[in-house]
Image (cartoon, rainbow, N blue to C red; front, top):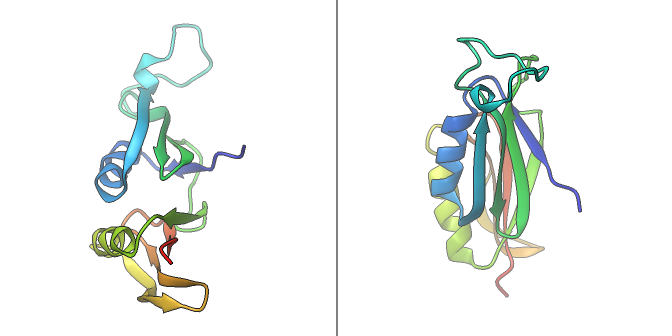
Length: 135
């Protein structure tokens, strides 16, 4: 199993809340830097106390990890995720939410490989390819 990881520049908690509204999410958990045990090598400061140390959620059968990092993240190139959704309606719903404050890469519509597809870079700079598995 490969679990993708999305890194953020201090706004991971906001991204988690947003993705939870966009997709059918299960098995969500979030741990903050402030929860790291004493003596760990993780930075614990006023700046990082609300940073997400580790999180994960199941999005349509794929476990996705997310965290804040102190390293530079260049928005939009940290990863692209393909989300295979059970129905055209699921694709349409996610597309409508992701496009709010985002940038459309490929408009919503049928493609030769699926009845409903779209590619959107969301307001956090993450690019999603939404693919319907409906026949």
